[in-house]
Image 1: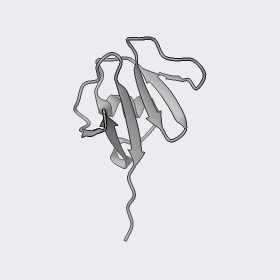
Image 2 (image 1 turned 120 degrees about the vertical axis):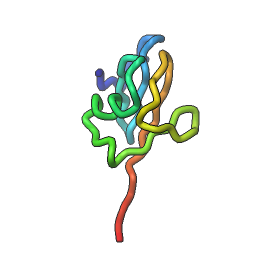
Image 3 (image 1 turned 180 degrees about the vertical axis):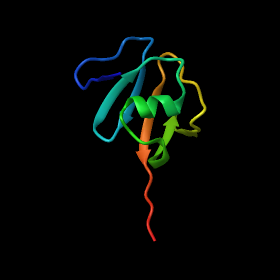
Image 4 (image 1 turned 135 degrees about the vertical axis):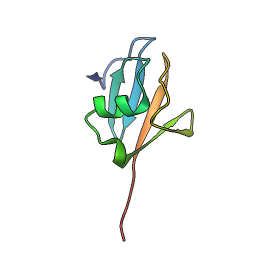
Length: 75
């Protein structure tokens, strides 16, 4: 995993965006694995790909961009 805010990722990499951070992970891993590779807790994160919510079991493809959103809870 690379935290990279200056140069574009390789064509076959997966880009993961969380707040103002951009990470690069390898394709072929699950959404859950990508979230963990970024140092985040999958329980507290929702992921979208192409504007649609995806589950943790989805396998990431080369060139995917995954946008992560922190869940908000309270009571």
